[in-house]
Image (tube, rainbow, N blue to C red):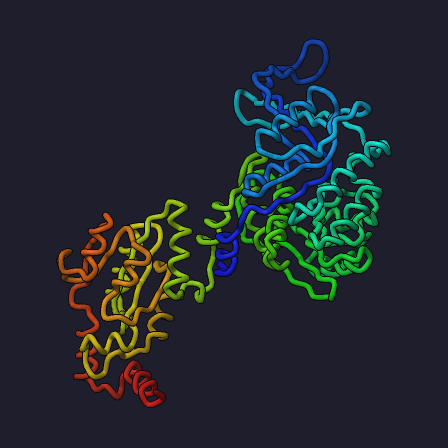
Length: 510
C-alpha cells in the first residue's frame, strides 16, 4: 500500500473531463436455451428479459461518473430509437450530452448479445449481432463536432479519447483536438483502436493499448515486459508521446516515458470473472488521475487497481473511489506503511471509517515483545477491522518509572517489531504520559487492554465512554509479562542477554 496514493485519492476533487469517441449501446437478450428448433439445427432461445447498457466511449463517461468526475460526452448517435435510449442512459448518469450530435446518415452502434441458460442455469453468450457504420463521419458532421469541442476545450482538466474504429476518431478530428488541448496544457489520454494507423494519435499525452493492440501497432511480439518496454519506446518516439501505458493482463502494466525510462507495475492476483470493460476502466482511472495532476507511475498504480476490481465483477460495472481506497487500505502493504505519525494515522482512520470499518486501539510500552503480547494483539485484532497500536516513546516510558534499564529497546525498535505482526495495521508513537491525544484524534470504536485490568482502570476509558465507544479487557497469558522476563534475565546475568547488550549499545550511542 502506498500512503501517498491514499492521500491522493482522498484529496481528489470533481475534475471536469471531456470524453470523445465512439458511442455504443450494448443490448442483452436473456433467456432459456430450451431445445433445438424444428425448423433448422439451431438452438431455440426463449427470451425472458432484455437490458441495455452504455458501451464504448459512453461507458468510459459512465465510469468517470462512478469515480465522481464531472463529464461531458462528444460523439454521434443515430436519430433512431437506440440513439434515444443511449442519450437517456447518459443523461440519467448525469453526463453532459450537449456535444453529442444526432445524425440521419448512420445508425447508432448497437451490439446485441444473446445470452442463453442451459437448464435454467449456467448463462453463456450464444451470439452477438452488431449494427454499425465504420465509415468516417461526413465532413459537415465532423466539422460541427470538432467546432463544438474546441469552443469548450478550456473548461476541462483532461481529455479522453475512446476509439473503437466506428468513424468518430478520424485524423481530421483528432489532430485538431490534440493540437487545441496541447495549446491549453490539457492532457490527452487515448485508448486506441486495434489495427488502425496510429499516426492519428500523434502528439497526444499518452495512449493505453493492450498487449494485442501494441503488437498490431508496432509489428513486434509483446510476450514479456521487456518487449513491451521496447514497443512502448518505439511508440513514444514515433508518435511524440509523453508516455505510454501498455496493459499486459496478468503481467500488470508497463509504463514507458519519452526520455527512455521504463517501469513495470505488477498487479496482484485476482479472481477474474469477466474482462469486459477493463480497458474502459483503465482509461477512466488514468484520465481522472491525470486531471488531478498525478504522475504517470501513480496513474498506472491506480489503473491497475481499478482494472483489477473491474475483472472481479460479472459484466460492466462502475468502480468507485471508495472501492479503490478499500483496495489500497486492505491490499499487501510495505511494513513502513504501517508506521505513521498521528496526523497521517488520523487521515487513514477517517478513510477506513467511511468504508464502514470498525477501529480497534490498544496502547502500551511493548518493550520486550513476547508471546503474551502476540496472543493479546491477535485477540484485539479480532474485535474489529483495523488494529492501531499506540506505543509510549522512550521519554514517556522513563516517566512511567518502569526502572533504570527501561526501555530495553528504543521506540524505533519496538515499532519495527510490532509492524511485522500480521494482526497489527498501524503503529503510532506518543510522547505524553497517557494515550489521550491518540484516543481523542482517532476515536476508536473499541479500546482494549490486556492483563489484569478492570475496565474502569483502563487509561482513557472516560474519553471512549464520552463518545459512545467500548472499553474491553482481554485475557493475559499466565506467568508471562515483560517485568517477569526482565527479572529472570537479571537473575541469570544481564551481560549474557542479547536484549541487554543492544540496550547498552543504544545508551552508549545516545
